[in-house]
Picture 1 (tube, rainbow, N blue to C red):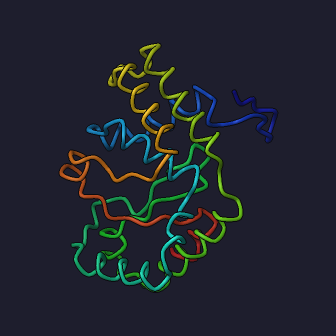
Picture 2 (cartoon, rainbow, N blue to C red):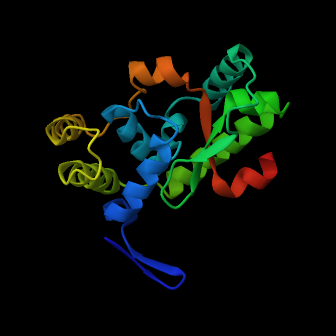
Length: 194
């Protein structure tokens, strides 16, 4: 649970049903076809940011980004960014929209790497990820989010526990419907990008 005292928040946001509900609803508006693993990926990115990209080499990350950026088609109708954290700390920068603005890909690459370095220092915990999944399960069980079967959410959470909360890809339907191409950037870097 999280309590707001004026400007201050006390408690764990990942345990707050109200905050997680509002956060998920904001994503459901755009991504109606999200599956359970897409919700988990959203939580994973919100908790850990882009720290997992530092497990590979920086040059490999930069090469992958340049290759993906070259292949993606410009899309000025797509939002440039969206929050993937209930408090707005981490943002997804959509490559198709970014490309349509004729922005510098090297600058985005640098800010992604800085974001990963920050995330390594401030990295969220598996406990937060577990809390987010548990909150999601409770919202589904209480039918506040009736889209998902609570037993399937619980089963997926058990699979995550058994596999030590691994990073996952988006679901096949999410890929087909939304063609996701993005990178993660800390909110504090948005003024540098835009």
